[in-house]
Structure formats: C-alpha cells, structure tokens
Amino acid sequence: MKCRNCGSSLSLELIDLGFSPPSNAYLSPEDLNKVEVWVPLKVLVCQVCWLVQTLDFHGESDVFTENYAYFSSTSTSWVEHARIFVENSVAELGLGADSFVIEVASNDGYLLQHFKDKGIPNLGIEPTRSTAQAAISKGIETIVEFLNPEVASNVIATRGKADLVIGNNVFAHVPDIRGFTDSLALLLSEEGTLVLEFPLLLKLLQENSFDTIYHEHFSYLSLHSCLDVLSRSDLRIWRVEELTTHGGSLRVYASHVTNCRVIEDSVNKLLEVEREFGINSAAAYTNLADAANNLRDKVLDFLIACRRNNLKVAAYGAAAKGNTLLNFAGVKPNLIQMVCDSAPSKQGKYLPGSHIPIVSMDELNEYCPDVVVILPWNLSVEILTLLRANLDVRPKVVRFSPSFREL
Ligand SMILES: [Zn+2]
Image 1 (cartoon, rainbow, N blue to C red):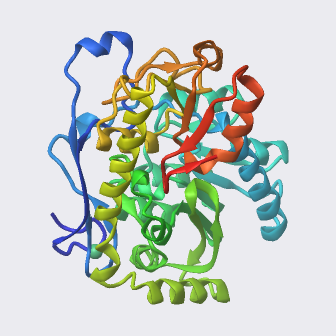
Image 2: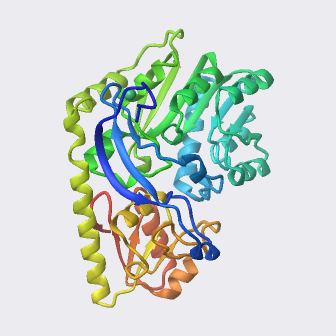
Image 3: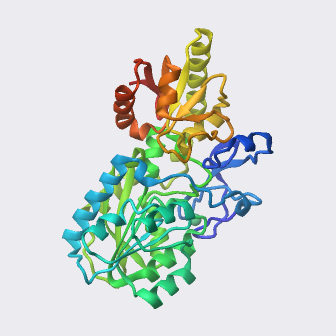
C-alpha cells in the first residue's frame, strides 16, 4: 500500500486489531439474521511524511454507507465547546454580516447554529443525509455532499470563497486526504483562516488509547504530518491549541502561504515536544500493540469475574471507541448485557460485532445493573453525573480505556 499523502510505500505496522465490522454499522433486529461484514483493521506508518493511516481493503466503498447515526447535538459538552469557539473566532477574526463561514462535516448544525444566531452568513457541507436534514430543519443551509474539488468549485461559483473554513473531526475521517485538503484550500479566501480539529497522534501514543482507532478514522495525525499534508496544498499553520476533547485533540489555524501571518510560538513548542517523543522515528510506534493486548486481558479478567459473581453488567455510550475495544476483546452479551445511549436513533439497535442491545436510560434503570462501564471515556465526567442523576441503584462505575479505572 502507498501513503495516501506522499505516495511512498508503507512497511511499518503500528497495530493489527484483527477484523471487525465498521464501528458505526449498528444493526436493527432484522439485521441479526443476516451476514455481517467484518473487515481488517490494521494501521500503518509512513516513514517519509509520518502520516499514520489505516490499511486499504478491498470493497471499502461498499462498506461505508450514509446510515450515520451520530448527531453532534446529543453531546451537551460538544455543543458548548462549539459555542465558545464561535464566540472567540467572531471576536478575533472580526466576523460580521459581510463575512462568510463554511463548515465541512457540519453534522446537525451544532456549530453553525451559533453563527446563524449572530447573523453571520454560513453554509454547511455534510454528506450524511440524516444529520444534514436535522441542520436544514433548523434553518441552516446545508449541501448534502462529500467535499471534493468539484463540490468546492461549485460552492465558490455560487457563494464565493469563505473567510473562515472549519473542519472539526473530519480531517482524520477522509480517505482521500489530498483531494480533501486541496478542496479546503480552494474554499478559503486569500486572507481567510482555516481551522481544523483532529485527535492528536501524540496523545494516542502516550496514553495507548488504541480504541480511538476504527475504520472510519483513516488518518492519525501529528503536527508534523499535518504540516506536511497542508503544505502540499500551499497552506501554512500559524497557531495550534491543544484541547481535551476526544481524549486529546489539536486545533490548528492555517492560511494560504501567500498570506504573511506570523507563526506563533505554540507551533514550534508542540513541534519540539513531538520531536522529543520521537514522532518521526520508528521507535515511537513499537509499544502500542503490547499495550492493547494487556488492556484486553485486564478487561476480560474483570468481566469474567463479574459473570462468576453473578453481577449484572451494562455499558454506557454506543460510541465508535467502545466498538473497537469490545470487538478486539471479543466481548458479547454474556459479558455485557446491554449498552445505554441517549440517542433515540440508536436505541432498539445492536452494536456491530458484539451484538449488545442498545437501550434507553429507563431500560437501564429497570435492569438495576451492579456495574456500568463507560465506553466513551473522554465524556466520563458528564456520563457519571448523568448516571448518578437517573439511576435508582448506585452501581460500580468503571472505564476500561485508556487505562482501567473505577470512577
Ligand atoms: Zn507519506
């Protein structure tokens, strides 16, 4: 396989998680009697541009459908994160009624709604029809397409270029990272600012959070590799901010190279931290597989002990992260009987691979669990509060990843 960014041959393996279904392929009751597609989940490292990426596999385009069930607005902390970003960027970039903001992968309008409230013209580009429809019904203009150079050209022809282009948690999710980056550069006005957020590879490697690896997540970016990807589209990063979202993310600010912005200290500081860690050397990529095997053994020991003691075990959060870990460890409903999720679109369905049923908070409460495992560990605080407020019983609450811990 060739690197999706620079075209070099890939030979260094970061981790092989075996086979699993796509993390967002939730099953309806009828689907349980059908063949389920399991595909290889292996991650490789480019030793030229250091972009970390999932292995291509045959039939990829057949596997990823538009039936995407994640609605950003169901996470209150994520909506608040978006609101603060909008407040700050409007003030700093001086955005107003004459400006134009584009968000790529705008989901259900969780972020653009804040620009709309301020009377700032905006446009969403969102490929999944269900979430785009939710945004449109909030009055947020949304194009239902995957961003590519053709879509970008059409937007420019009808609406012009944007002063601010935002891509939150999409950059790592696109298979054609070159075409996507070229499209972002096309959409951006001469003086415009591009803001991208993605999980930071350094955190994944430092914390061994291998459960953030899943098929829909094609790239795992460091600041070093991100600089390389953007520079090939003549974009330059001038500021970075480290965020706690998704277990450790990076927000980068970039502009066209022709735009003479001063590169802030934050960029060189993080580059130095990455260099010290050895992010551009093979040694940085050798520990993750062992850490994953150790965590799997701990999880199975804990769950088997629960079963031997006749404890009722449930999970909270039918997230992609959870599915990677559950399928890697081979967990089935005999070890975790149900998973509760607040999104009505997921309730009544089953997790891909493990086939654990997804239930509402009322059903979880009725079950009176002895143990609840929080799967989206990045939202542990929010979820723990929710459980304490809604359950009549007081179960033991644990998280498995990035390290096993009782909460
Ligand atoms: Zn490369």
